[in-house]
Amino acid sequence: MSDPTYVPPKVWAHDAPSGGKFASINAPTAGAREQKALPVGKHPLQLYSLATPNGVKVSIMLEELLALGHQGAEYDAWLIKIGEGDQFGSGFVEINPNSKIPALADHSVEGEPLRVFESGSILVYLAEKFGAFLPTETRARTETLNWLFWQMGSAPFLGGGFGHFYAYAPEKYEYPINRYAMEVKRQLDVLDRQLAENRFIAGDDYSIADMAIWPWYGVLARGELYEAGEFLSVQDYKHVQRWAAEIAERPAVIRGRKVNRTWGEESEQAPERHQASDLD
Image 1 (cartoon, rainbow, N blue to C red):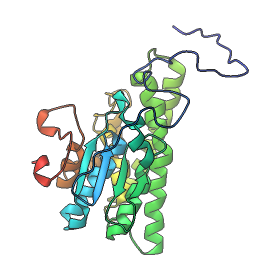
Image 2: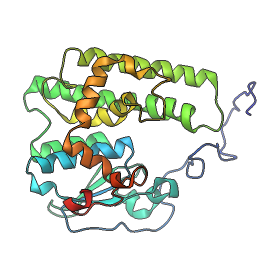
Image 3: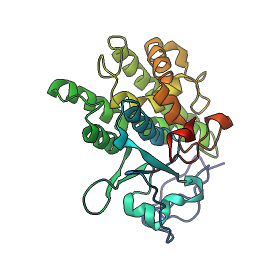
């Protein structure tokens, strides 16, 4: 148990692992830790990811594009085992210097493959590339991006804040759990109020805002994230519940959730995806 009277030193030093689920891979430095090339498949788009909420955003988007008939969205999905440090291989770092999944390489462009990293950036890139799930009219486009960036700014409080201290930290502390539980419930209330007046997050149409928010907050509302549904009383957010259930039934969402997944029911896992039949 840590000392509750801890006083931070004048200069912080990484003297020992911090503990917790990800202690073995956490470090205060960036860059590659080993030389390791990334595999490349036959399709124009190469996705390097894991089926965490951030990773699922992109695989859902790609499956939604394919469902609309955009054959140029065919992709290979390669598993990045973050618990084993795959994200610190030199090939991955070349695509994402921040060493976080997901990362995408587009081989359909002229010249060198185009790297795209950060899940929100990937969603916008794909939406603009294929002309889908992001409105072109200024007001609707701006509202969609408002909510996309809301997710990008808010989810760290859910994941790195609440999720870490509630589920992953080596010790349970009342203050950080209370602090982040309060913030997550406030965020759920923000969504509930928005969805009380809109079928989807940004209005009447399904968009990249829904694809970004659902893997975090929709899955949380369904009691499937951090086993925290009862603790956060997620059933109280009726409009979020309605929206979360509707999104969960979309065939492309069901397929996208399987991609780069290595846990749960075997029928829900597709560690790699190279053709549509890999998800059948």
